[in-house]
Length: 236
Length: 101
Image (cartoon, rainbow over all chains, first blue to last red; front, side):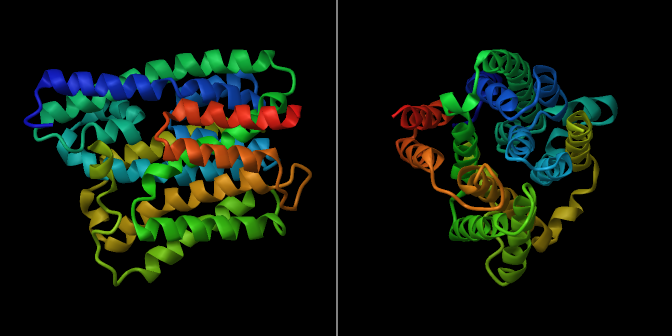
């Protein structure tokens, strides 16, 4: 993308926004398949509005975890939005009520479409176009998916329980770009598998988060660039 | 209880976003914090895949069933660069077909 104009930023953002916004269909279907009602599923998309955390909450509840374990998993995954915000804050320069509202659409895709822009105006354009497009579509398609999902008798007949694992894998896939990331994923998977046999549902995921702390601490001598440029790659 | 989790975690996730846009960027200067923040989603998502696919529906045990075959299908679809929705619903279709057989 050479010297992007407002126009190209808007069309790129709309493309990403429309493609991503439709994922809500799968979230809606998976939400009701996991035991939430249509209202709970829709309120998650409205209030939480960060896909991986939403899938985590319903995934943990659906596999028999407690609401507390589900909420903690969602919050841990939500911490990456804090990191995105730290990177974007100087670029976007929002204050007051603008910051309060802009925060709600601070997610993977809106960050990726803003973080590489050379000027504040283009960064804000990319951020808001992507974020608002996804917010509108995500909530509409969540409702459609949830209502459709409720018409289905046993969600297992349609393989919707398996769809949750595929959704997590599809969210994980683009992050496995470095050896450190791949080793972390493998270790976390092994720790979680081991923990399944000895802890209540929902807890294995929280224990596996410890792998991130361990790998992060142990690789402190490695070049700091490793993994830190993840967003730049996403945006290309 | 589910409503409580939905509302509390929803509010918490919003506050995490707001904190990012509000606290001084110096917090990121600590390389350890920055690295762990990058690794947490990877560890959590890998663990979620594992639990979702291998945990026995009945409780504390691992099991290999149609969900594992569905995950293998998801890997193939991701290698073929299929879009997100195709990966998710394609994988569901594989599980549904296997259970029909």
